[in-house]
Length: 314
Image 1 (tube, one colour):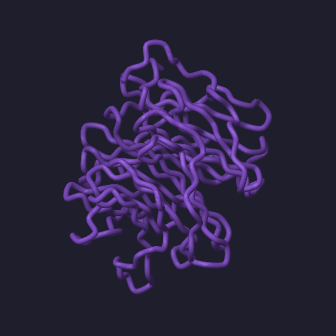
Image 2 (cartoon, one colour; image 1 turned 60 degrees about the vertical axis):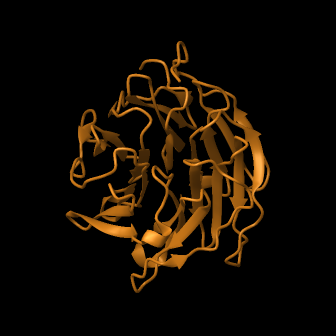
Image 3 (spheres, helix red, strand yellow; image 1 turned 45 degrees about the horizontal axis):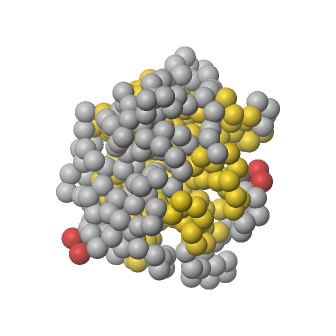
């Protein structure tokens, strides 16, 4: 890997297996290569064994997930204006292209999100060339569906996409999404059983955001949701749902990050409500913030190890 991009896209996912809690954080170097930093309870943070995932267009969407206790990894990015699915399986050597690669037209600037508990429930979210947010769903085969298709609520170009709720009717796959409108406000869109895509969620933030602000979300249990954003003051922020209601609390600022920093978040399923958040508080490096009780946040690690920060590129 070359020097990490100063404003690298970030993606993170977690799972549990015989080695305890595992976390993977994906990032991009200044040649476009997608790398991973790994954590497990036995070794701590280390470079991992999977090698370079692939090469993506600079500063475009990045999303990642694992299922079956980490035996199957999937990373999604944009290459040559096309959506690429990269796969790593325990019984195969190295990374290979998945069946979603190049299948549907996407905007070259799209951000990405992915969710699912198994291969059969995978859903990948992206913007198409008309700026509508869509989802690719493995049925099989891969099919394309609308998530948001309304000109009156069309997202901003290159909006961040964060999955905000567990939808029981879709095999517990997160199907609600938070994105940014043309007025830079954040909007939550929820699914309905009838397929009506105009149901507005209750998420709100009293803060202001620049166009293209990064958004991440974790969800667990029946109504525990946490949304992480980067506001106009370059602050990493958190907004918590209020348990037992459809309401949200006031957005709180946690720490200062670099302008236009990406943010990724994972829940630690074996130790809920633990959450870990990955962002850039300084150019060319990734910091880990987190909470062990779901309320109080602190800096867990100022810089993840093993990332080349020499000669980083803005």
